[in-house]
Length: 319
Image (cartoon, rainbow, N blue to C red; front, side):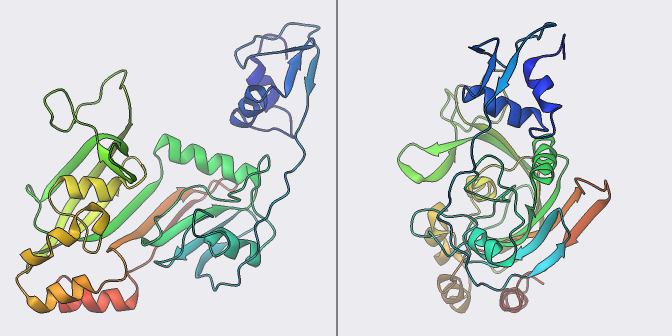
């Protein structure tokens, strides 16, 4: 252990296993070196005495939810699910016990809990109204390894979306810093530069927000609607929704980002009515690829739109 940083040394212990968990313990003041709280960067010396106080698992008030899951793959390490639109991923205001997390607890007792984690197994999220492929970890090792792949941006993620309007150019990338909208906490927005335009250049030390990059391709445009294929380079909250809105093509049904204001631009009154009657916005996580956290095997999953949405897209001439 001598000569190692404290966080690296702790990560070698089987009950801790990763630097991120080691850092969590250190930051919470649960690790002492020679009787004193220490920093992750402390370099250990021969004879140093380390005390670790692992927290007891926290009681949870999560209740299993009997909800049918569309499971695409499952082993002892992870579950891949086709999430339906309308299902919230984890408990939040207004959805305490009817979420994917609660449904997972009904399906299996083997979920990554980390140190009293209240979002067991959740590696990444999809918005309530977004449908599609999502991976869930069943143990801490799988959770950490999958999280690392997301951080390293080695995960393959493809989305499809139907938007109102037509993008120019038909293929390209949208990039910006995203942060909470200053006037509406439910929304996110691209940060503006000093010229009051969206800041599209990455800076060494951004003052706020998280860098987000979305690559898009227009597959078909018909009657005022556009069918997008989108590849995520980053995975920020509401990223695709904000970026498509920034391009002047909000996702159909996404009233939070201005789709309701553009419905009248659609050529067909029938299409206008069908878009207004949508019970969701039209964003779908179609493809997910990653390296299995234990076996190292490359995994790839794809799932098409729900049948009722496919029928609409065909009627609109987009499929």
